[in-house]
Image (cartoon, rainbow, N blue to C red; front, side, top):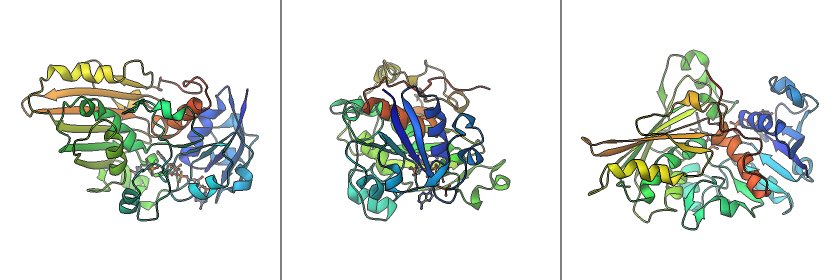
Length: 346
Ligand SMILES: NC(=O)C1=CN([C@@H]2O[C@H](COP(=O)(O)OP(=O)(O)OC[C@H]3O[C@@H](n4cnc5c(N)ncnc54)[C@H](OP(=O)(O)O)[C@@H]3O)[C@@H](O)[C@H]2O)C=CC1
Ligand SMILES: CC(=O)N[C@@H](CCC(=O)OP(=O)(O)O)C(=O)O
């Protein structure tokens, strides 16, 4: 069976990467693409790299346009998905790449986003360990899915094995991320001008990035301990990619030797989350173009810390890849369809 698909926000970066993946998907066929300021233009005017979809034209985004498809991917700015999704039938699978439906505690939304919260949807991170086993179970029957934030994906996956196994002190976790500007979207502002970004490294959202409550929510699925997370993303001149370095104190009485085997066991059997052999470090260039989260872990015995690193492509496993993987699971398809664990190099 071939499922018909609509992509809203198709002129953006996340929408473009979704379309690139969907164009090669054997069971999902893109029928409708919608946009806002670019509505009315041929899709290839906006995404010249998507030649195989040159028959498609961008239409204005509305519930009427999106209705009637088996699957609707929303790649819109925050605050736009709830109203559209409400008007789409229960028999339509809606996958939201935005943040609106990720947070379970409405107060977290109010505190970090400053607007009224809407209900949470099942969270599209299949490999996330939860109290009831891996998160993919709750995606199997879902008709609404919230795709994780890209920074949240890298930080969550990097440290969750140690938190689950009680190997680290969860009260003092520090995450520093090198991130590419495509994470901010195509409509990104003058502060991302090439002249200001090239040869630069600029921290942003210091002391309060909005992915902090999302990451804590993910980690709370495996621990009741109090969690303290300091997170600092740093914009660097690479178009795609995130390298998260997450540091936590080794818990008292824990032998450093346990770290490697616990991390490896946490993602055993997962094809899109890989823990590297001891001594190796993940690099962004190894994951660009892929749906892979590459993790490395080390112990600094002098400092008494665990250093967990995770590299992802923000538009791959960080958005569009996770969206397609989640859709595959919800539709009962092979989870790998349309996705690659391999990147492009050099
Ligand atoms: N970029 C990334 O790495 C990640 C993005 N996300 C999320 O994915 C979503 C899309 O992000 P991204 O692609 O980066 O953003 P872009 O700015 O690149 O694209 C935004 C898209 O939304 C459309 N749009 C803008 N305003 C409106 C409106 N008022 N009504 C309807 N459509 C509108 C734009 O249309 P037009 O261009 O025609 O005006 C465009 O298609 C966001 O929620 C983002 O948080 C999540 C994880 C990672
Ligand atoms: C470079 C940059 O600005 N990146 C974005 C991450 C985008 C993302 O994950 O999107 P959501 O808004 O859907 O959570 C940021 O850190 O806010």
